[in-house]
Length: 186
Image (cartoon, rainbow, N blue to C red; front, side):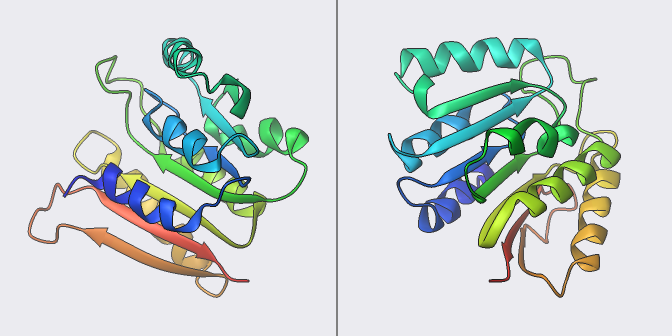
């Protein structure tokens, strides 16, 4: 199973044209492009990444695909999601996507971390409208990845009364990524 494709399939069933979405870890921009196409010309995507290299590539890609007007791009730590995105919102967010770990084909020492990811997930949760959805894809095979995934799992357990959570993982593979599909109760 390709977990990023699975996350996009699940989000595609939830997101509607005109919605507001967040790509909290924009990276190479695959989820940002998917979200921009899904929300259409009347929707808005807020894409965040801490690495200048990722931001530059994302803006180039969006320009080439004529999607720049649908996307606000932020060069920031995803832990600051509320501070950078909330001032630009006209209503609550319909969907947020996280793809944790490191930027493929770049410096693997620059990764998301438990503390900043938990701040980001909490911030995205607060920005979600009732009935909104988040996907969090965690990779446990890199240094710090398992700790980050355990932190996300603990956060989800602490919010169990407010959320419906599905966990997707290849249970036969201890290094399998974990995809959480999170829906905020209406």
